Length: 190
Ligand code: HEC
Image 1 (cartoon, rainbow, N blue to C red):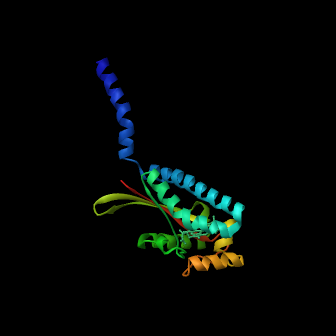
Image 2: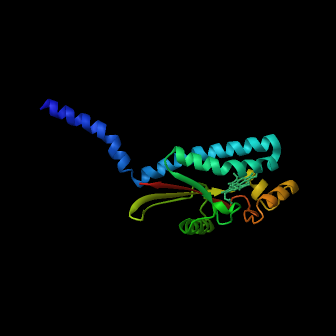
């Protein structure tokens, strides 16, 4: 009897992590998204701030241009998810939102105009895509002071020149402090 109880207890211990991975609740998936995105955003911001300090905003444009997309892809792959950045007013056409992402970005704007701060604004859902379950998460990104250098109303002349050369169809300008610049999107196939 004791033996059976013990082996049952043991198998519960062994099986527990497996079941919890298989049945990660939406809450757990959101928690996981927070961790992945926090780490990613810190890394990207670190690169950006270091480049600004070293060579000013013109130099830092290249970090955003060359590294942002790679860092985003790599952070997704490292964590078994897909990460991306998007916005209603994009700079790089490769970051254009999917239809569902656009709808959520519009909801974020509506929530903001009702007084909600973009700081903790987020969205999550579990959907069926071609018969497979998919977790989708979006976190709003607000405009802070450093962002104004390259996304604000007025940039340094050298920044203006570089940006218009690299992104002739740039829409990501004219933001003010506290605006929603866009969102980080995390997708996980379940
Ligand atoms: C030094 C200039 C610079 C600064 C400062 C900067 N960005 Fe950007 N940002 C860029 C460039 C360049 C791109 C295009 C990146 C690419 O080609 O992938 C970009 C793209 C983005 C995108 C992707 C969507 C799009 O429009 O293509 C988001 C979101 C974004 N920036 C948010 C921010 C936020 C939030 C801040 C402040 C924390 C910030 N940026 C600060 C230059 C900058």
